[in-house]
Length: 127
Image (cartoon, rainbow, N blue to C red; front, side):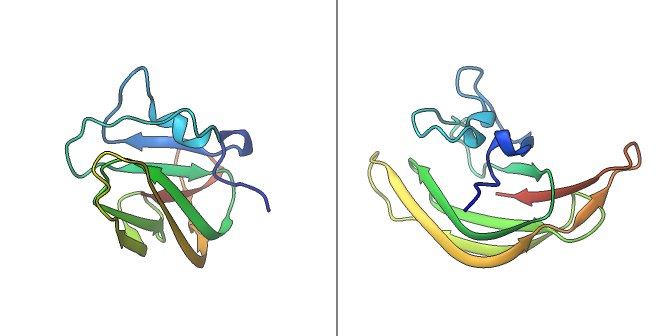
């Protein structure tokens, strides 16, 4: 199975609600579990990921600390303001220990968004 969420596959972070220069949101996409994104700690946090092409997602695994709830949404219209819910999960409180949670589902993620300044189609997911 191909990991479509890796930056090496052309996937990009196009928005993150917060960032730390030592632990940037791009670390989410590098495939290395030793690197990570650190947010400001305020809630909620949001990341929008752009896939290079239409992808079908069957499993999302999240390694995190102190996350209360994770929502995954997909873009279904021609802009990045409208997203449709795909999955939502409340995480067990682990008191500062690593949380590992997986979502199993099957969805095409996401519908194309045609930017006016580019003839290319883009596919988005909001996490």
